[in-house]
Image (cartoon, rainbow, N blue to C red):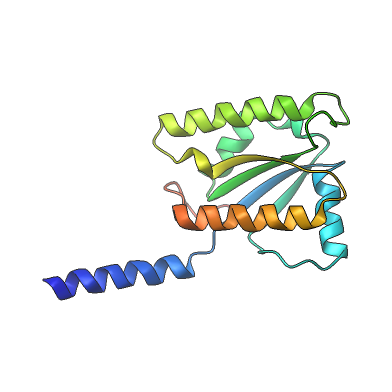
Length: 155
């Protein structure tokens, strides 16, 4: 009986080590997407787990997009916008922050870890910070494990 329990724990640990989270990163055009582009130009290394989706402004993100990404199999979702007070569309990043908070609340209400959705702020010159944010989110989601809704649809 004890041997079976140890084998099950070892099997679970092996599965966790091989788990590669699928992350969707919604990036504003002027800051986050430019930082991603700069990170690529600088050949910075960061996990290839994130799929970047370019938005004209992080304020264009809708709660439905965040929830739909999780529903379609993403293990984590990032919204990346301009620094607070520096939005090219004045207050888009504040609007995005409110929507991310609302999505987190809805996820919690249905029993899904709200940490799977996060808001990040950076400037276009913060390429190394972009890479760090992707790595941090990847590690956070890896610790959470696969999404309970993981259908394998999002790729």
